[in-house]
Length: 89
Image 1: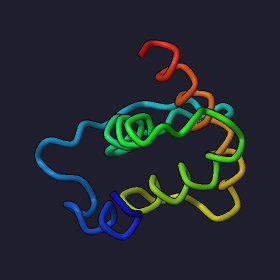
Image 2 (image 1 turned 60 degrees about the horizontal axis):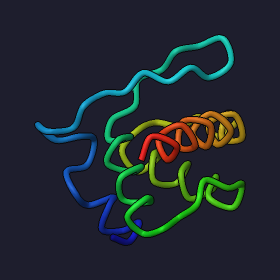
Image 3 (image 1 turned 135 degrees about the vertical axis):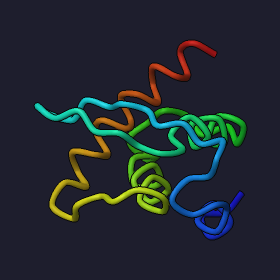
Image 4 (image 1 turned 90 degrees about the vertical axis):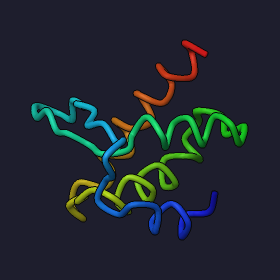
């Protein structure tokens, strides 16, 4: 699924999207669709490496607000969680 298709699929969450809590720095935030993003990237064979950070942030930002000044912090936190996700698969 391309980023554009992801963006169009039930923008801002659908009835089946769960909210996942994620610790970023000192803040806990809720993100819609995070498990679906991880499942999609895993199915595409995307390894949990630094090169996937920007892709994670873009996909999350398609359905959640990501403050521009916090994109790097989001990328680090999302990659950390994606690594955990992949290690359980």
